[in-house]
Length: 581
Image 1 (cartoon, rainbow, N blue to C red):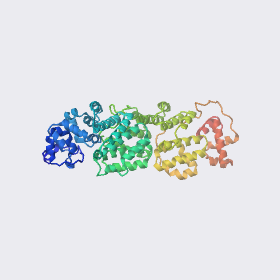
Image 2: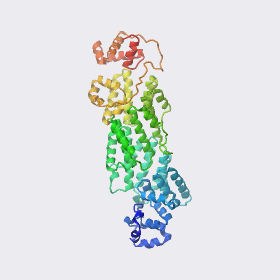
Image 3: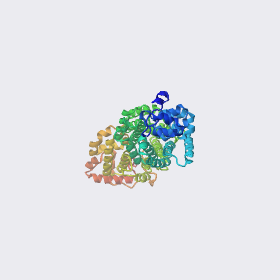
Image 4: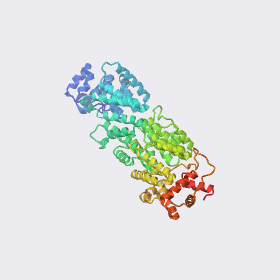
């Protein structure tokens, strides 16, 4: 090829364009190039796959940047730019003003790869204005504009705008020819990638998960050597985000499998969004398993890797993971400093509303660990809309710690119980809190069943930190129940030491009457109370007093009610204060 041999290899953009496979003899290229009135169609008829950018190269060499820019947009180069695979084109656009002046959509896409959102928005507005004046704008231009708008919406946290553009982009894809769709295999996965982020921002975790799972591919398509480079890159980004979402939700086995595959197959230090999400997923998995030092090391490694672009969802996931580590390791002040920062990632890049709600929940949990119960309650005065179940659990616990037992029970009753509606770790937290309430009420049969359900799920996913956060009562309860002890004593022995609130519920709730004295206990209730003071179990009390276990539980409920307490230790403390034991 004459013109291909004349080009300086340093200026060749061989990866910038893949053309339609229409027939044209290579010998015709010289004649076609000489017809300046036909320059805009050359790229669409030139067929040599290995020299597909020759026409654009020739136009660049001759200083015809306007034509080259137009050809790039029409050849659907912008999706590849947004996917991060056309760095040569980005460099050319950013260094040659003629490109940006003639084709603002190219400038917008190139600016987005550098995180220059203001420049991207300005260029997008100019491109939108130009297209609005065209009587019949090309589908490639409209599709490129939709994709750029989605990219800007992701950075701005504008989920509604982004989802509308995702629908628009899918409709435009239908209008492409089969050859055009084949030429841009990354289009569908790029749209799904953005759509999943928008669904996550709106709190639609199930929809986000299914979209990411579909786009990541079940056969590790991010390492398929025959696939388009841009397509592999986006699939890897989806796989990484999917692994973090799994880890956050408590699906630790699945998160570990996906993150390990991705970090093995992709270079972990490239700064790719997918690799960094996978590193954060691994850190979160270590956190939930109580492996705090490994979590710290993985998190430090993830943070030391420079990202190749500014992604607010990635920045938010990183900050939330840091805060979770600080909370579990007894550094609530450090967590509060992290969470008290601006609700925007870098400059004007907004976090999603879902992440903002997660920050509020983590803030309340940090206040609770710091024994600032009133601050925790105040933080959740207005319920986070996109994370209501998690917020109600923390609020119920805080209210109970403040002695507002009745209010805490009302909030706890409003937590969804459908396993499909909440994540596994939220389900475990709910069951353990319900079991704690049942123990305080003397309903040990219900507590036994509920603890068994919680620990069965926790053991399956190794949710040690979640179980350890329930408090010390759980170990004592399991130790007194032979069946639970036989099944779960080994798991409980492996639990880490995590930071929990030292504040216990008041023995006389502030939302009940503050009686100066109690209703007199019966002789049997007094006998039961004295044996509680001797740290006897229910079985030991039953054997000593020659009573059935159910009768002992009945006496326990009655004396708890008369003493206005909900815990064994509180009953003993109250009884001693009144001279009853």
